[in-house]
Amino acid sequence: MKTPHRSPSGFSLVEVALAIGIAGFCLISILGLIPVGLSVSQNASAQNGAVGIMGAIAADLRNAQTTGTASPYFKFSIPDTTGKTLYMDEEGHYDLNLQNIPKARYRVEVKTIFQPSGADRSATRQKVLITWPARAAVGAALGTAESILELDRN
Image (cartoon, rainbow, N blue to C red; front, top):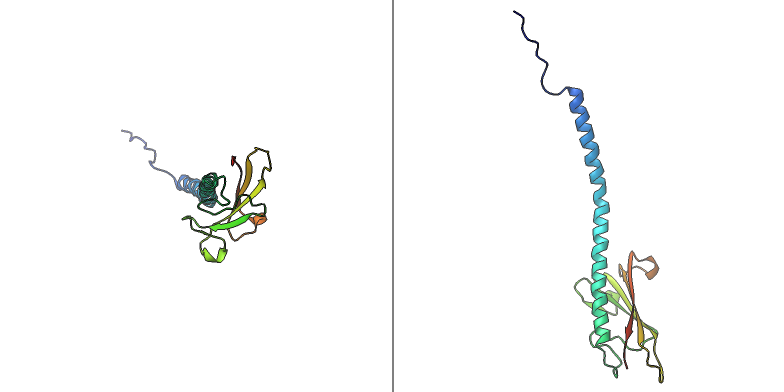
């Protein structure tokens, strides 16, 4: 009687080596994307913080009395064509001096770019520029957020 011929079961050494090589290539590719993902996440976090600061400044400027000369919380002068610079950290602490905010992340500049005069009933325009990191020069900042606010002070 003839014994049936069985084919060997399992994977050959070449197949296993090829599978490990492909898995290793995929793993290295994925690990190479981690720094990019972290950078994008940090930038999104900084932009989100800047938008929150922008909203707080806009609310503060809108709450300034039409007869007053400064906003109630941040004390921005209205009008102020020379501008005012604040340094802020992530918790919302701020100061005019960068040295007083050890963990400063944002530089905030607010400046009047148009102030109506006389019978002109136009809105006052304030430019708000937020850059980060706070210690970087405005031109060398990693990120910026800018807005023009129109304030009806009539």
